[in-house]
Amino acid sequence: MLAPTVLWAQRTDEIFITIDLMDIENPKVNLTNEKLYFQGRSLGKDYEVELKFFNKIDPEASKQSITPRNAFFVLIKEEKGKEYWPRLLEDKGKVHYLKTDFGRWKDEDDDDDVPNPMEGLDFSQFTGMGGMPGMGDLGNMDDMPDSDDDTSTDDDMPELEKADEKAEAIETKA
Image (tube, rainbow, N blue to C red; front, side, top):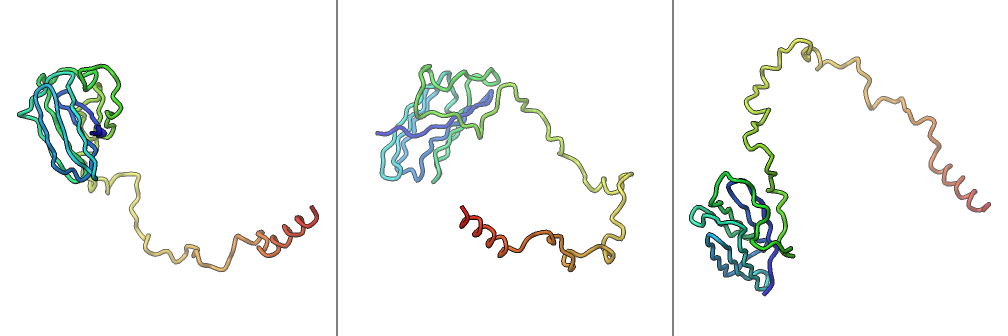
């Protein structure tokens, strides 16, 4: 059996795991507090993976979703609010199918409680700000120059045919 690509990311209280297989047939999942076992068929090939975790998770509180795009797991750490795990797996070795999910990754020192600075702003309050004149007579632009007037700024450009003739003349001399 083949090992599927597994993406992972974490927060202080949870682990995100994505098994990157499309159209999974006959999925078998066994989740315990120490490991995740997955087996399934995708696009005519059989896949299997067993992940023995660095630390324990709470399988009862954890969630899983198998969609046509992938198998996704949100695993709740048994020791919530502690520090980040240094790695996903119990063993320190590099595993060729395991990759960091940078789309979901958040560093330990990133602040989860930082509010959105734009949240709660009422942009209608900015219409009467001093120093910002209103649009007034913007609709009447009769005195503005039109873009389709007859004046051209391309007067100093040579005709294309003349440029081609000069290039041919230079080539024949060489």
